[in-house]
Image (cartoon, rainbow, N blue to C red; front, top):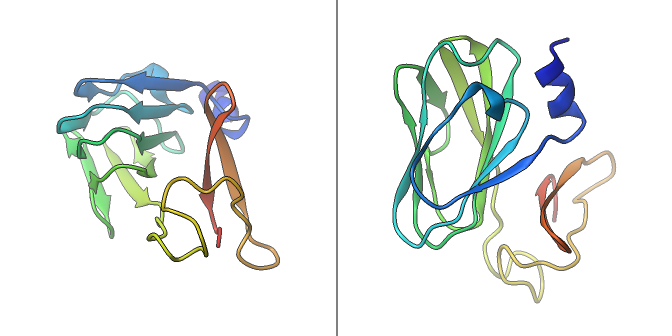
Length: 148
């Protein structure tokens, strides 16, 4: 297992960005969080990551964040356009290709009494569900996974 993959499994670093950003090799195993009022992009290029590397991406700003294939190929069955409080992960299948898995985002009202993206008490949906907690600031977390 690569050192960067071990970092990813252990919950890598969190980096906030406020302008469009081009991923670098050091982003493997980390969370890149876009926090901008206007539209931004996160660009993915080749020869920076190895098969098995992951980069978690969150959009916590009001502006739309678009994941863009620079010289790499980025496939998805979801969307590469992230609205506020949306996110997902890039899973690299080779040095030149990644698959983006977008996390499901509940709509307001899906959880009784909760506005989307602001639940103070997220709960696992059913037995054997899993979730990941990402610390983004002191006393501030994002919970992603199979939550109700």
